[in-house]
Image (tube, rainbow over all chains, first blue to last red; front, side):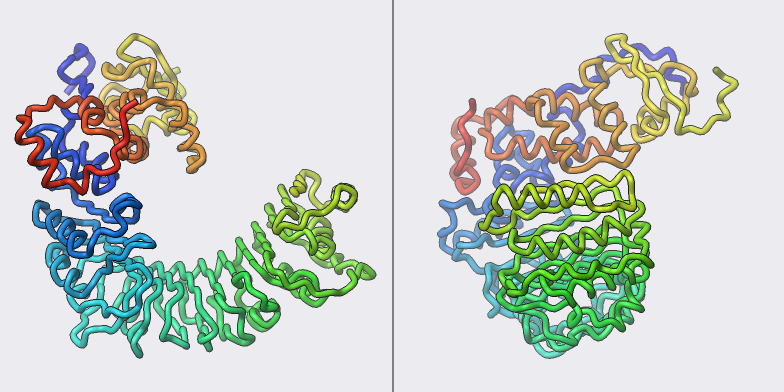
Length: 426
Length: 160
């Protein structure tokens, strides 16, 4: 069909959103908060049921229950959700129920037994997050949602039904503040043969985290002092790993790391414990697991001890592909040692030739030791583009003379990369 | 001119003519992201100026700006925030309708979200005007609906 001679046809020009086909209008409606969405029923008689076929329902946070609604009695909140589900028409692919902090409503077994049947046939994305309570068991009916590709839940107690046939299409699983009955986590994960992304934060009831899911690519784990062992070498495709100790690191916790890691974030929570990096990642693991790392982030590892600095240097030497390095230290632990500058960090035999971006962010008081590390990095990184040194964390500020002397030192440091830009923030 | 047809698509530019007669150039790789434009290229060839009857010189440059960033992979949240920062609700609507006409999916998705954000807690009258809807409820029908859905009517912002 030749369009060459087609005249400008005014009928083609749609200038009112209301004239668009409903699947196009759905594009906007899907992003509206539930209250805005339901309110469209009053725009006109044509629009009365437009909202009922939008396949996304999000009852979340303050867009569902604004501050003055937080104390709605539970039966009222339940009824709102039930009414919406009953009026809804057509498949629901995405359903979120996230109870905001401060709200007295709790998602109970009874609620879920009423609502899940509306969803189980089609729902692909499901998020159910209770506000902090660990007591109620996740009802078995949730496990009948066979089409799930993304599942997030929190504030429940998890036990797996005996006839659980798995979430065969699940790609993304996120658990927060969940208490696992014995073996529940392992059963859940082994029922997800396609799982690619897993996030477990602030959960209880598991001491061993040994995973062998071959499809897993991204893992984020926040654990407490009850964790005894983390073993990841069987997760062959795991390339993005975040580990955060919520209560200080236990030495020897990590038994093995994935072989082909590309992104690694190792975070200790802001605490009064001293987190020694050499205890967290022993030297044997460095040799086998850091070969492919491109992005490394370390938060709250001590910088102001010589052996720690040396260890970080050996980490950098074990990561020849490293492109970006991020170090942050909010920790209050100040080891009272006089700064030891008598030996420069050995850099003759070293060349960090992929490293392009470095960010170091610390409290003002640890600046001396960070400077040794920066000197080493500048002298060995032949491709460095930007190094940002921020001493602004914490309330203690350095005085102007010290800041000036740091600036001057930074300018004078030898650079392996002529185009390296050094930014000093305070 | 025609002899350079063998050069790679990425360096070729396409000429677009708006409904009000102005001509703009875009890279062929950006044109690929707008399915309507690509269909017209497939029908008419890439040496001819493509007529876009329903897109005008006010909005096309903005759309071109978006896809210029897209082909270099530089679209970030910051860029998108800047992109719509100085636009009023009606300007965003015009861009949205143009993105729909051009079948420019990425821009369409982004603008859908932006419109939804702008409409948050807006009054019923505002939304009616924005969507181009005439109210045909009787006052009784309307007040009955408002009562049934009272929970969704709290916290509406006043129109400016």
